[in-house]
Image (cartoon, rainbow, N blue to C red; front, side):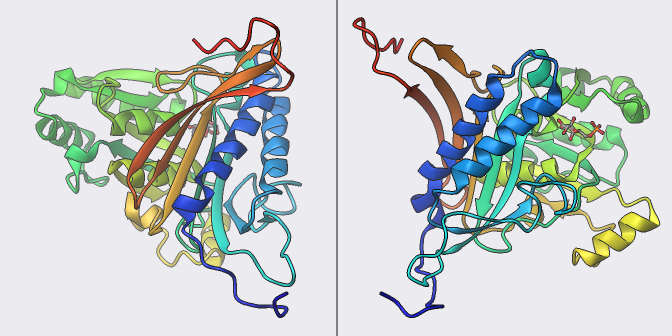
Length: 340
Ligand code: VTB
């Protein structure tokens, strides 16, 4: 038995916690997938939040939610600052881990059965993920070929030409993903007039960012204004994929200015790279498919269980895993489990 308050044992987050975090996003995906197409986005979100919260309980860590469902007074679970993980044992604290969650990215996608809803988390050593407020963020996301080449203050046309040059393509070959929102009217017009092609998405600029950072997805960049929490999660994924991102918080009210200051952000106009948003030495990014998309299959239920598909990546050890899990809730029937 150790003395109360004894130092936390050291761990390697990427090596020791990857399997646990895969389990967390899988549990959230299974429960939210049960609500697919029911037309109730809030119920889908709640199912993911509750499952995620419960799955954290068994993990031997002193987890701290740095990006979650909102402030403590507005979210009963997975609120910013909530401690998660197994209780300390024999007075010994488990190691501290910062965690960013988006329990269900694309709640509307799940509620309507549309593609690309995912359950997501990122984790790092303390202070490895920016404690971003729940506001908007201007973002440009692209692949590793565009390293240090993007300028969020430059005209859209300049950035499109740069991306085309970095990818050895013409601007007219590029596919740019943009959230379909009225606020993007001018952005969309500028991209069109520069001659690039566009894929408008209703939700999910996080999975769009992952698609832009990998080869073969036929998406070359994501432009526009989306959620800042999703921006930090995108940055964590990009740290694992060596993708490129430039971003800036949209701080446009006095109230937000004060909130940003309270959160310790000194310069609200700061331009962030992926490394600024997710500076951790060790980073885990895990996302499980709820409804099928380009990258991940959704949850498939069968008589005796279900099957999930998860992307699990690490930054320091630079590993990208696709985890295909069959979860058996009952003994399989006499014909066995169908694997293929
Ligand atoms: C985006 C998108 C999310 O929120 O970040 C968006 O990626 C931003 O907010 O899937 P608005 O909906 O207000 O534009 C989501 O749509 C939902 O979190």
